[in-house]
Length: 70
Length: 416
Image (cartoon, rainbow over all chains, first blue to last red; front, side, top):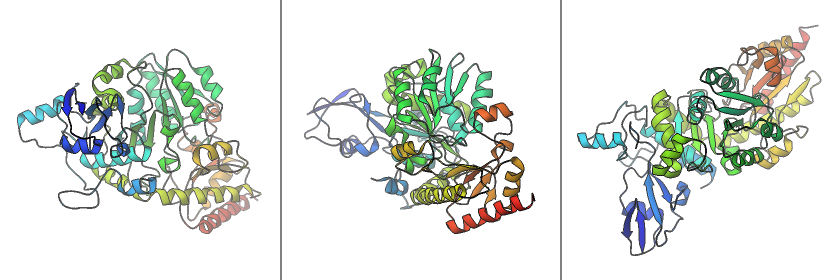
């Protein structure tokens, strides 16, 4: 199954939840990350219950950046 | 998880290093990075990481996460005060030439910000009676960039039809900003009823003990920042999607204005949140009983508490707040002199400018927090000379009642 994670194609063997994907991708500062799934921000309470599907687009986003604009 | 559980466990699962079960207070200004490149990446936004407490702090992050979960939003920025929250949220959205529609009868500090400070920067606010949604509809024009209301107007004690106002705002393509200080997410989650941005003075019920000043801004996740009339945020949304408002807020407005909370204060807010649900239940219960007592008292001219069955807002309290109308009420004793004599005669309740404390607090709004406004302005905001505002505490109700009873008696006895 293919996911697009932060713009890159990522193969995963089985369907997984967002929480599981965060662990697999070893995201930095998981307590700070926001997850956008197919253009919509997920509530944190949805991380464990949202199961990813083939071709889903996932973005890991942060709003605690530094001092300059992106 | 339910609110009672989130208030205790939300945003913090324990410190993995030490095992500390309370959120550690990260009393630091800045954060060391192992390499020059790592710090450069953090500054450029290429990599997440703490840089400087004016922008983010781990203790404050825990508070922001807990508030996000309690409001069921998509993110939060905690601030140094409630006014810093209101000012930052609004200044992230408006520019010179824009207009705001705000409810009349909201907190005097917010009125002053809109009417005086923002007006100096070319932003005009139209204050309307928000109890009737058609007044907001009539005030809308192409310059309007946001609508600002409180869940229960302080001290007007009116309850706007929040779902209808949200619908009105969204039809106009603008966000609805709601101050949820008086109700807290335990009683009401504005985002569930269409609000886009929720602001708080966390100094009040969330802190709960009068020990720290703070505020918060939560994006409820309802507004589509990829559209809308905010060029600076729409442009950002191409890179950070629906986080664009929060990103702009934190990395531009908040960074530039410097309204960050002290880590110690964030800790005190987290501690306050843990007992917020049972405290709010008791605040609401005591306030309703005190309102009923005052309403039946022969020397009390009027009582304004939306939880009273006689209130014109009672149906909205049932619909929006599941019957709980918060811990704030106002009442009148006929004139300013009797109001002053009543306040001077209280033995238990404290006379001070705050609300949401565990202690019962009173205030004469017209001569204090609304003292800068003239009689006409006070009238339009629903502030009368005889008004006493009460933040009903969580003491035993019979003790609160006895204190009010003796103070009313003394206020009227001394006039004879």
